[in-house]
Length: 154
Image 1: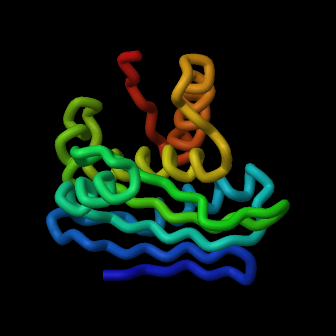
Image 2: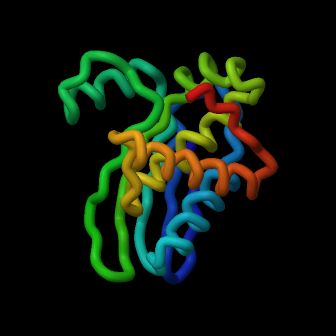
């Protein structure tokens, strides 16, 4: 199933390639729009693919040479001063395994992955401890707009 949100400036398409979990597409779209607007990107296109672990494993092999599934992958496709085009892939299977750890639903965990991926698209990174702390603060900020508080163990 595919969902789309078009404005004259920012287009967000969702391709739901799994059928095991119900997804609130509107929250995912709202989160990406909020992050892009806050980062100063008034134009762009973002595609969000909600995939299985099997599909995520294949994407990891193909693009990152990792032989395992992950929670989210993000790719910047094009960028200039006010426009950003990107692609996110989020694993619903991964989310369903991780969600109970935080007392969340699978849908809540997918929202976290979408926020995390969108933050990567707009330039945040989490490879070093200081950068990871900044990323976590941004995740907390955006999750709070949806009434969620992450319980990070790190």
